[in-house]
Structure formats: C-alpha cells, structure tokens
Length: 248
Image 1 (cartoon, rainbow, N blue to C red):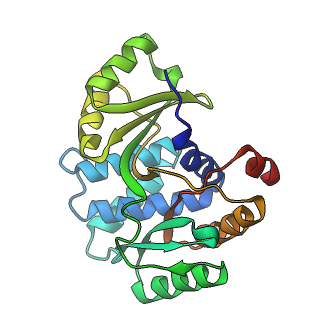
Image 2 (image 1 turned 180 degrees about the horizontal axis):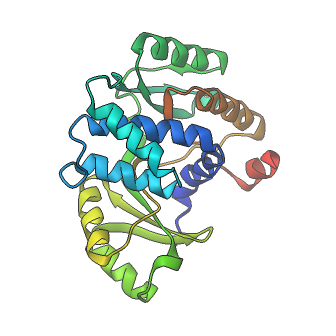
C-alpha cells in the first residue's frame, strides 16, 4: 500500500487533536445532535449512522450517544448551526475553520479575533477553494480485517479509493467527496466498521515556511482548537522534518 506525503499535514494535526479527548467528545455530541434532527433512526438517517459510527470509534460511552440523539430529536434540542471560515495565517498559510455553534455572532467574533491575535486575517467564503479539495477520509483498524490486505486494497479501489496507505498502525483510505457514500457502502458490504469516516479538506499543495513562522501558525491553530465551537482546522503548511523536530 502506497504512502503519500501530501496527506501528512492533515494527519499530523489530527494526531494532535486526537489527544484532546474531551474536545473530541464535544464535537461528536454536537454532530449527533445535529444529525438526529433528521430522525433518530440510524437505519433511515445516513448522517446519524455515520455520527454514531464515529462516536463508537472514539470510544464514547453508549449512554452519551443516546442522550445526544434524544436531545437532537426532541423538541428541546439545541439549535446548532454549521459555519465555515477561511483566512490566512502568518506566512500566507491558508487556514480553513469548520464550526458548529448555537450563537453565530459569538463564533464570528471569536474566529475574527483569533486570526487577528495570531497575525493572520479572516478572508471571504470561497477564498481558499483553490487550495483545498474535499475528500472522504476513512481510518480502519487492520487487526479487525480478516482478508488479505492486498485483496482489501483492490476492494477499496473498487469502492472509489484514490489512495490507500498504512501508517501508525492504521489503514487510511482517501476518496473523492463524491465517492464518500460509495465507500461507506463498500465497507458495509465487507463487514468493516471503520474507526472514523469523515469528509476532510485536504490541501492540493503545501507551502513551506521557516520554523519561526511555523510556530506562529501552530500557535494560531492552538487558539482555534481551544474554542468549543470549532470542530476542525485545516491548513496547507508543509510540516517539514525541521518543524516537526522543533515541536518535540
């Protein structure tokens, strides 16, 4: 299975995020709540089915999952809205921020202030369309796979996989956004439940900056990650070996 350095930016940041268990649970609860608005039956609600799958993959307790679903499906459910922001950080690095919020004015003000404090600036929607491609990203635990991995790769390609790679004890599968649903169906056919399945924004090219600028960008990203309204942050900074060494 082949590796591809163009994905490394996302996975290094995702690894950092995965260490923040409480933050992940907050994001997943919001997604469960929003998804449950379209019905509490996961068999009839693909978005909810995917949200439950991701929550299980993060080892969220079953009671927490059920409470979030009931909250979203009930009349007393909180009104969450999805908001995306695009801007530039130090060194001209593109930064895409995905949020889910119950107060849009608060979120807009906070995101704008983070960009300003971090030496960047908030842009207009669509300003980063040329930098990021939306992709389906599936993470599979190879220890749960009974079939030969070469045969698995062929099946995944048949389901729309553009890239299949192994790293850090997991199998990462990348599809076009249009094939996201097809890959979900293929995995169901194979009896495979991924650890996570998400639509992510992958940079189609990366920009290299010096260590000092990289640290400024990472401090800005930390500001975003501390905000409970923020779900995901994507950037197109190349994480060179020198930058990674400076983070240790």
